[in-house]
Image (tube, rainbow, N blue to C red; front, side, top):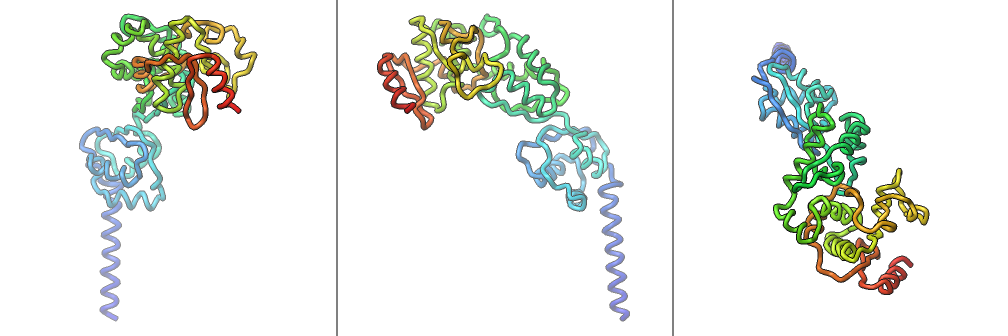
Length: 328
């Protein structure tokens, strides 16, 4: 009996000591971080990975105590990816609260897919909590960029598709600069020389790239579609690209109608020869490369034929045969 009582007493002391240790670690100890510390949480990071980052960067002093706190509160869900700033001398309880409430978040990731329009980018920014889509759309519409000595009409086409870590307090103008700076950084070094060889300006080549982006479905077709566009421009033929009409429509449509084809718009490339007045999307680097390095082809037509591929033709008769075969 005495042995059992002694063992129970030791267990009680151990439990008390453990409780005191844990309480001090998560509520009482404010020695970490020693200074203001920023931690970037990559997209898809698990909470276990975040715990390790907090420990490695010195934000928390005792990873085990922090892990127990998380488990006890059942808050081991994924943390939103982004950048977090923790002020010096916070308890682990305060760190967890700031992490999960967003109070420590200073930047978050935004993915801009290839082919998004400025409007779609604005809507995504609003959806991720950066502010009004109208404010972003206005900044993108009113903004301009000097590209090889040519001032662009807007920022459409020059908001480079990528994944950005955007400050949560960034203004629309600041976000636009982040994306256009990336465009200028990614623009091939020979862009101006290549554009001159194609008898276009660099912004006009980006307009070609935007059409390639919206039309092509596989990499192999990009330079071929670009080649067709340049061939038709040289012959002063209307480009007849459905994607340009879709861009001018107030809402997205899966099919272009006969009335759409008659729409009076400078983006109607069935009615107007030459390039549309601005890019119709923000192209990725592969489409920009295709616009600067088009395929040497005598094709003037193409039609989608399933499986991600287009078929190309030199004459209208060949094209009509392809249309009949591919769309039946």
